[in-house]
Length: 152
Image (cartoon, rainbow, N blue to C red; front, side):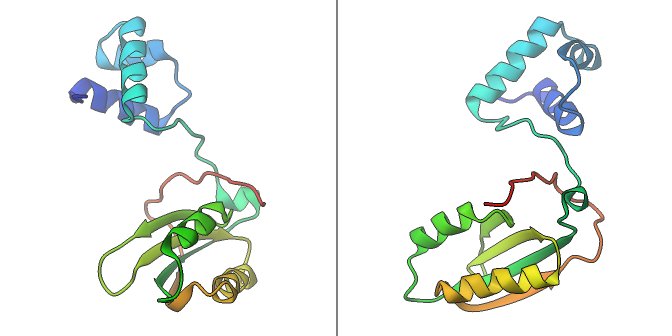
């Protein structure tokens, strides 16, 4: 699927405000409502637009603490099992397989520092960690949208 400049503009406008009507998008890019609808449908079906979500405030959901956890897996740990388990953790808002001295970078959103410690304890108890380093976010300059996943 080829993405052109109009598609890029539509996706950017949706990223800034996914609730705006298709007619407003059409006015912004100089297309009819039906033409914008067709482009959004095509981008969605093609995977360019994966989802349309609300940008929520983590603090409003009682999760003001964001931490980044660099980790290397225990050599005896099953990587597929780790990935499946981490995908189920409600605290994990992002997980990246990375290059360099670490294997993974996790982003977690939790209520307090005790929850950061509890999360790390869970990883240790499960036998996933060979080593880790945790960094706390002090403030946000630019942040991705937060998607509340709910406690499980």
